[in-house]
Image (cartoon, rainbow, N blue to C red; front, side, top):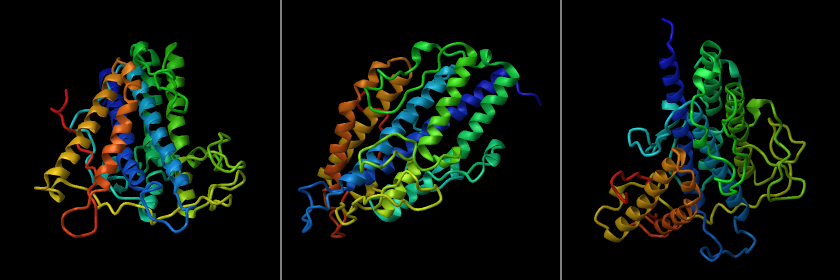
Length: 360
């Protein structure tokens, strides 16, 4: 049965909304590991050099780019006349969370450990070949975006880009809206053909920054980041590999080899002993901890509502979320420094639960 235009547009909107939730679903696990790392003055170290400043910066860079990826997906979704949703409880991830509807790895909320970084590396693993993804047989994030690109091309070839890219241009987030957080925001504007090309460019940028190798690139992409003078920026997969190997990539390192550059100092001991997959039943009856958990979830809910407003025409709302992100970190670290009452030696942690009726 031939797909009509309405069904085709609905399919693309659904795929892009799934992509938006996919990008969002990586942020709580990454942030939880990041916030669990004890800062200077919070950990009694005999060696003052073991500060974890470098892995903190590497994970922070990944999180900033994941936020950028959400902006890019929202721009493409708005470009085809969709309405990005960030507060629909039926769509939001809960943890443990199986990525890609169960096709991808299951991610947990866990502290900064080698095993958790290995999971992060698995999340960002490139597909071995683009061909399965083109036919909907994807098991990686990159494969999923290949499928989106394939469907976008097929549908535009069938109905014309002018029938697909019908969204209002004033809903597009631009670099100024993104408060200089880093990266390049691609707007889906111009003629239908220009919008189509921009949408493909946006998806390619997401893939390159995430898996990198799926586009045939080597480890480096020539964008310098903080680190040794000869270090080049690398995709997320390789960033996590750097942490695991305690070493930066050298510009000449191949994608299928380990990093051989300068040391990246990691102290796996300087971490809060947060209990895996924090849940409300871990703190039931502990009013002080329950209040801290609730405060975190209020802040998380505020962030999601602000993102939804920004993605649906209130672009200034994006800039207003900067202090909310700092509050989120503060609320999370308070929980991770609070021992659970069961003598386990573990601490509480954030559940990343959206509260639909709180703080509207």
